[in-house]
Length: 256
Image (cartoon, rainbow, N blue to C red; front, side, top):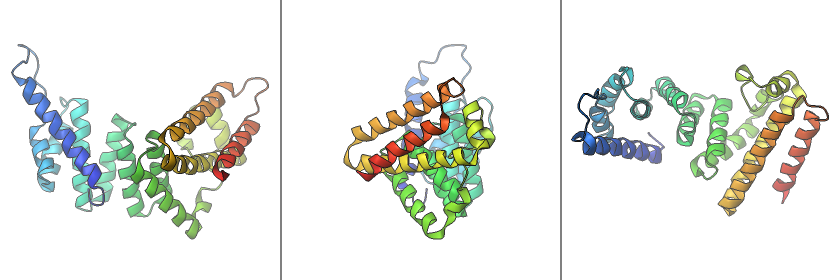
């Protein structure tokens, strides 16, 4: 991927590893077992950086219903990278969408998709993807750098006004009662966004000094969210008060 040599290296290495593993196991296949679709042509095209062939042969692998999940993910990543290099941004985004539906824990792909959204000029979506990448992997230096530079750009452009009064998550996908409550209240929505923004800044700062400290902060944030989700609606629990308290704690850490 242009501008993302690390992603491209990971993709090719991962695909090749799969190919070698399958080749090593080929002679030990059990009689009567249905053979899986051969990912070798897709692997070879991706390793050779042959974008047109990658799009063609990996597309066939993706469309084949017998393709196993792991190979489909790698093929989508390879084809998305090829589309990216050919400046076919929308198609690259669509492939990364497919990857993340199959495995929503891939920080590299969130970061890569964020770079594509940024190229298209959709800064809020780009910022959200960079933020998710950092949450998944607090030591993801590229995502942290992307988040920081884009946040500064948004501040300069005044574009943060576009997300004012909106939470850090997609309300259309909200399922939990507490999430729906936050979406329905602009004040709570802004509190959620402020908590998320300060948390990401604190994580980025902590990681530059101590990975252990960054992980500890991540655990604290997860504990806050877990308690918020389980306590909402129970007697004595004040959601606004809990969110304001969490924001103050994060601001205190940020000022240190």
